[in-house]
Length: 172
Image 1 (tube, rainbow, N blue to C red):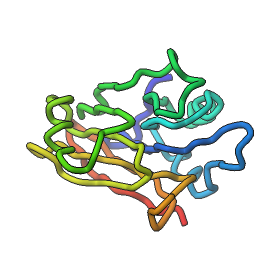
Image 2 (image 1 turned 90 degrees about the vertical axis):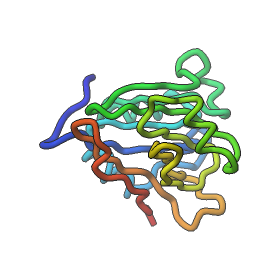
Image 3 (image 1 turned 90 degrees about the horizontal axis):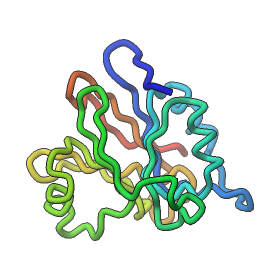
Image 4 (image 1 turned 45 degrees about the vertical axis):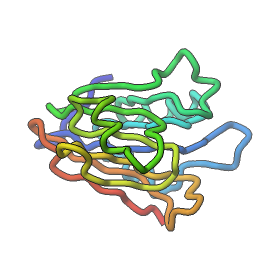
């Protein structure tokens, strides 16, 4: 499936740390589906836990995902890191970006050409400008907020090589 384009650019829904498993009561909240219905592309920064969620997300838009530390079922299916171009924007994705301290420099070294690095693991939303203007973006978790105030996901609008909009969206 190729990315759809609506008007000017791509509407991207960003997820991470959903931890949706067959024997778990954890499911995407209804509010997440509103955003997924509008997506041209879905990014998932790991800890999906099961391929079933990949299949479900692919019903909305093309999905790009990386392996999280709890994705044992997806070993050999998903890469540990991914670099791609969407609407002229260079996107890198990894599950664990390491500690907060030193993150901007570390991500710039690891992904020197990326305009935005999408990551997860902490369940804490982050939308910061890193070294040299590289955006560091963690959507938090739509299903397991831990210490975050809300369940969240991310929204990006990418167009003509620019990140036109970037936001973390509270789902509750």
